Image (cartoon, one colour):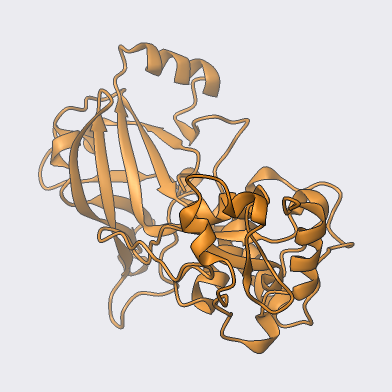
Length: 314
């Protein structure tokens, strides 16, 4: 799931016109917190913490390359100010760029190994709109009213989900804050999904299907579904969740499919009898895939709530 974007106005040294051996794009610290997370520490003896990213490069809205680039935090062993930089295989974009152009950087909340770079030329309407929206800043969120999720929020969210998972399961969260930032909600959804991917072996609990992406890091066409939705007061405890393919998630949310007390898939007769629903009908009565940890098994109380409040009658 793509996050919202951050931008940087390019200096000459960020482009192919950079003198000498300079290469890559410097990432200001003000937007680095919105980039994919880096490892906690560098390999022994190295002054550089880095990660390789799969990057899609876009110029004038057209993809000009999919490359493997390096995102690094160079500390220079303390001899110079630390610097973050994207470097390697960015020539298809950098050769088109000139000083004053902007680049939009968009990470994927579900894939720490992926990023998109969009070149926005300084003489374009999109550049003018970006300038007006951001008050002429040199870098920052491309939409200040809708910033991306920060690395700090992702770290906090993962700690929160782990803390929930360590405690007895509950379907409803009576202690949820009355207000929650949009970015923290996205961060918690990310952490919730990561936990369920591990618990269900990257497989759909209803169909045992999985769709892996060869260019990503651990990316699968799977959703972490809240059985009792957040909007209905459902909790982020992993036991109020189940891992599903996107079509099964939609079917669950719309009451076409549920889980019986016997831990088998239940498809209402009204759904099974409809022409075109043969795939769903074939799932009726089959055992669901269960989470690995006993304490994180999807709550029967959540399924019971779903059967009463969401599942189609008949």
